[in-house]
Length: 98
Ligand code: SF4
Image (cartoon, rainbow, N blue to C red):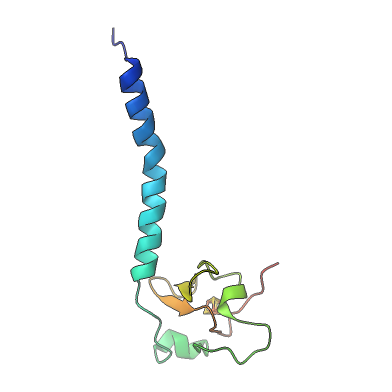
């Protein structure tokens, strides 16, 4: 019969609790390292993406598809995986946050 000591239990619990935190932090680090979307990229052009929105009240930072935080100027977008878009940017796929 295996008897788990209190020390083993606490050590295992600490590791298990840290795994999601490391995974989340790693994902955010990867997103922050992603290259910035080039407006001349074919898909960006197809959606009329620009780094600076010309639409009043519409920008990437307030788009439902933007997954960046308001604390940074660039962040990921569901439309352009593996790239960062400008928080101040815009494209024709813009959808307001509800
Ligand atoms: Fe910006 Fe367009 Fe992505 Fe919305 S869908 S975050 S407007 S690039």
